[in-house]
Image 1 (cartoon, rainbow, N blue to C red):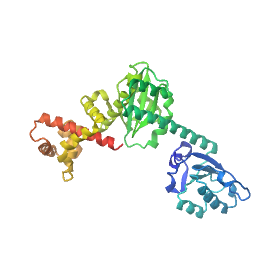
Image 2: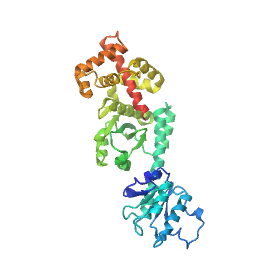
Image 3: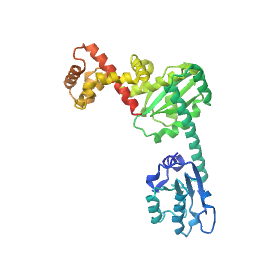
Length: 386
């Protein structure tokens, strides 16, 4: 957790950064209260007043009618390794200019409360957030293993036992990718609704989020439940691309379900559709497994086949047209609409692409080979960005 994360908590969202804007990256390990520690009338062992990496909360009572005490307090907090000072504007609404200048020069954030926030609630929310982050990190580590390693059945069972969740017999997974919606706009609501899952969990993987649902029956309408659940959380479903897995036995198939949902959402983005079921990908599943098991071989094929289009001197319109031609499944009119050009322009470009990559193949072979290369190229591009 850092100062920027601290400012995204519900109770601190009205706080204002009035100095030290370049220090918001500083780590936050604790939240503590400053009362009279920096009053000259009170003597403490200064190196034990506050722990390093703390956000220090204060009403600045120690400097009442004594604004000259404020600069010394800020200097001392910086020396003690504090991450930020957050003050309640009851004694001072605005701080002296010399204090703000000193803090700004040393990248020490000074935050002003937005209203009547209570110190105790700020501390509790911060600690709760930190605990949630620890749990999220653990789950993300587990999910990364399930996604990226080929685990034996006994290893799968062992991993599931490490997760403190009451999993049911069958598992279904959805993978969500944001469509231009900032995570700060919805993530807090997203995570707070996890108890409604009963026998499932939420976690992140790269730039996407998993909703893992387990149930005694494979007839459970998981997709409908997910959309109703997101609506209840005030999260707009149209702001996401969804990928869905098939149902599997939880103890043996959770890795497969996670991969299916993840790659289905990737292909939904590639095809520019709102959702995709893994089972609908047909032969694209072969490309996914090829890329997953041997990405070097897959990309060697791509760079070899598409070399004339990937060359620095090549017309960039050719590669873009080839990509759209495949995602639109060869529909010339739709490609023309996407590229704001006449269909004959698309036909001319496609003829040129064919001449460059496979001049002697027939139409069917040309499309088949181009589709495989372009889809692997797009899959690699999506995953490389993460």
